[in-house]
Length: 114
Length: 110
Image 1 (cartoon, each protein chain N blue to C red):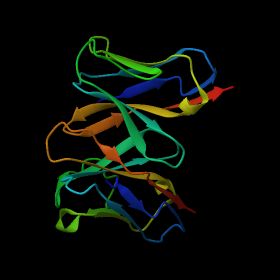
Image 2 (cartoon, rainbow over the protein chains, first blue to last red):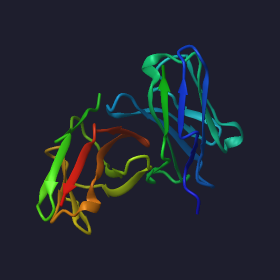
Image 3 (tube, each protein chain N blue to C red):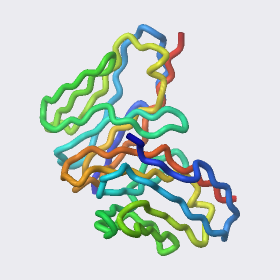
Image 4 (spheres, each protein chain N blue to C red):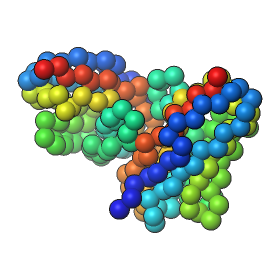
């Protein structure tokens, strides 16, 4: 069974540019999460989708970040315009529909904003 | 606001030695996770601890949970090089929103 897949694995952009990260969850997982780790600090929650609906977006830092999950399958996280402080590792995770299931994480996208 | 503190943040061990990583959290929770991450790889779930006094073991790793003290430990027995990785504890705040500790970088030297 394929795991959670994230693209790209690395992205280097200049301040002010736009970047789109993609996450393909495990097939059949209704729940999809975005987390990020900035500057080697704690991994922090960004948002949670249930199918195509945003269940909780309390961790989104500001309106430069836009997450979508069209059709309840893969998800994208767009940063526009990117700032230096957005640099870090962005993790995606998914879990089955049942409540209280563990999260399966992808390997992350390392974003560097110069 | 739930806060999770992990220590130490860096641990250099000799092979064959024992050590413990500590995870303290600030408010009540019913679920605590331990994850392992190898460089450039995904976070691998090691243990899920659900109740006070829970103890789980897998190979040379043993995790325990004391919900009254809001403390979990990850004990490493007779460390081997393959255990070198970054270890995270994470506590459920609500739903499946997890609050992570800063991570412990473990290096096992032969």
